[in-house]
Length: 165
Image (cartoon, rainbow, N blue to C red):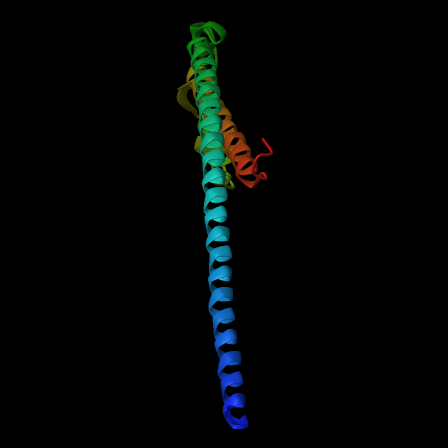
């Protein structure tokens, strides 16, 4: 028969061995779960990137089409200026410097310079030139508005939950 202290020592060694074996097996199991979770997240991230790329292509395509339409309409309007503001109107109406200063200040979003006596004099700017400039400015404004709408759509698409499209 084995003496008592040796039995206790053997039992303690067996217990430590079992605890160590469980520790190693548990760590392997947790590592496997961790690896599976990391792989699942990588797959989800790839799916989200793919959806975002598709949304970006869609928004850009729509934006380019809308900008083309805005440009075509604006170019048509600009070409029609001579029809709506004929040469006779240019001869009958000239634009003074005060109007030019006020218009430029309004376009810049600034306060105009104080009016001067020379502002009442004709600046030699034809009414058709003013109409063409205003039409070009509105064309640019509409292009910028379309760009902003496209950007807002893109931001909404990027913020949308995956697979909700």
